[in-house]
Length: 570
Figure: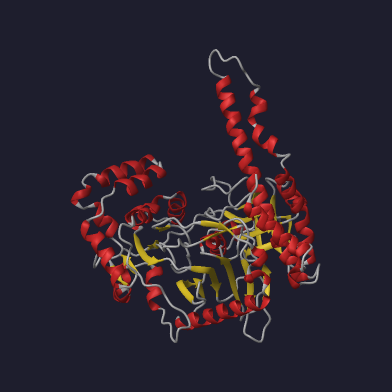
């Protein structure tokens, strides 16, 4: 079970524990934060290896059980023994034991860093009232009569929508989410308390309150406390937990062209989503940053493609599949069977070439475009539309096409920090090694997260990066086709990550060595980069007349800043 990623994680751990301590005093606040990241990185890999071994063993056990149930089988194993064979056998693996030991150590390190047991991602207004429901994971939809609900979950992947009626999501620290991940943005958008806890005793006590109606309060020191809710307390929460008011989406005009270059985004605002339009509004000056060359397939082109003679009967069959409710089959049907008009294919190729970002000859980009259209029928997209009262026919997708940056780092900036008790001038900046997919999708581990203010203020690092893997641009480069719907980035509704963005070529995942990563071990490099990103946030914010912005971007391999998206912060 030799794992290079585990070796890299152990190198980081031992540099802090026994080496030069990354130039920090042992048990200082900064050292403890670094050690939390090192432990997190090792424990994620160890748990992943153990889970994989358990899965393989359980597959073998399931096959044995199935064989023993066949008529005439000689060997008839006890099905009770085989039911949990994989997990029971994997418990004794050294990786599982290491992960458990580090789980005990991490809370002590957090206390050494001056941190309490709770980490708050979304305050939920400071106090919420609801009925405790201990569950494995968030449901797609809350059953009738369950609202307002406080969900005490075992995990959170980052892809979930938070169903209407849930007023708080509380989870173990092992599954803590990045503050600027899509699920965190959705929590703040919905005024949901989202917090993780590293104290197993507190979480066990909470799960023991299953079915109890409690009031949860966020204390000034960052702790979450609870008491029995008084009669009538939380009436406002109950009203807020009711199904959301119908979201109004504008019906777009017919597509003005098959593909629009970025130079025509502004004059065709009603045919584009927020990603495309806000990108065209950016006005970089003096080389402070750049925006990628871009072209967009506008609203209505999917519907026009459905009506093309080459797709006769397609729309009727699609409607039948949607009615059956097998969404995976719906998506596969769109990607595999929909024929793109030749005029659309030619326009995509021509406009990207004219923008200075030509598609490589023979690139199978068509599946990426159709995959974005098909993401109208992902589970979370369908659930969100139902929750917001948006009919399928009202939701339309434009598709923004760009070359993928050769990113050394990816970042998200909220120009006005959403952290509890943040200074009004602070920005919250999160950075990962490689592309931003691992950040916005809440891949296992944490990003570098820091509050950054004007140059006369100190930088406060909240977490150091611990994601074992980064996502990287292929050596030959590739393009990305990004969803840009009329149901995202609306006033008071972020809709972040509801629809898919798909690269033409798969982007490789590689293990990250933090033992020699400047972002972690070089304080001067880290501070300089964070200051640059703070200044970038202020430039972009000024571009939008001072409106706080949620900015996604990359630092390319030459150290240049690239802004990939900016939208109003909600």
